[in-house]
Length: 413
Image 1: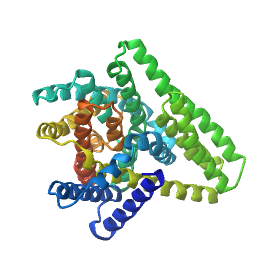
Image 2 (image 1 turned 60 degrees about the vertical axis):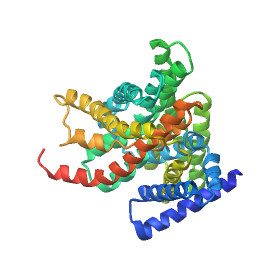
Image 3 (image 1 turned 120 degrees about the vertical axis):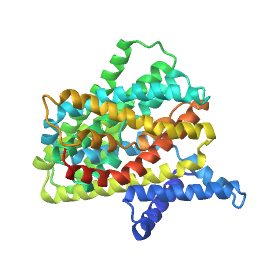
């Protein structure tokens, strides 16, 4: 199947599911299209197993979409840049300490807790998953999803400082989580000798190098935007930064996600204030809002469709069900630990730990990282378990975080 045909089918499905959701289902857009895609996929699976319908064409289509490449080397850069455009840098800097701790220490702690718990869980169910693979599962499932989180924050109405913490952490721990995943995969699954020094070197090169690259290229982009007043050219420049900059960062083994976040923040703050006319700002916002909405919907449709090709057995399904509370527990510990330790010196909104825990949605990046693992039995297990955790997170937490936050914020602390 050609790339154009894949794009045409995906675009048609996105539009169809979005229309059905808007007219009849009336769920939040991203969740609605994912639920409809999952429902359609489950229906096709049932029809295929009952032999009422030959589903090989649909299976071939889903298998022809390289999900991890499409997200990690395609959509992710644009989605993170679009997210960074709307981050207020003054609020971000005011919360930089706790955001940095949550995005780094919190992600590492969650990776360790999930890895240890998953290794025990898989062993108890007779699923022979080596320790490094269990730790890889911890790394790929720990980052929260900035796309889903951002869509929900716009409707919840949480306090400004808490919203900044949630949005900032989700943007940066995405990149940090990818770096941790790459380190574990290279040092453990790749068979290389594990040393703290080598791991630290990789982290500095990937994460700090990505941040520095994003800052330098983002500043160059800002200067170029300032030199012209032509919205078509300026939009093209931002598009070139997202595509060319992300590709170059990956080629240099720098963190493309972190580079896009930093570049988006620079353009969204300094560029928006000092380098753009009002007409350009409006056009730029409209363009990236459309890109964000389309890619977001496409991503969640792909997540919904992936169920067609999953390996689902009783032990794997049981492992996936128990992995949900394990991931939530790890999230709670990784949030509660730094927040509790910092309370004597910093103030936090009421029920901050609960809201930060439940708003930590997992998304497409977890599924994409699982699909990027080497082929084998371990990969099949981790893909299915990750998929179930992500679906619960997006649907279960995504549909309840708004009511939960509003209820908690009205209640006494």
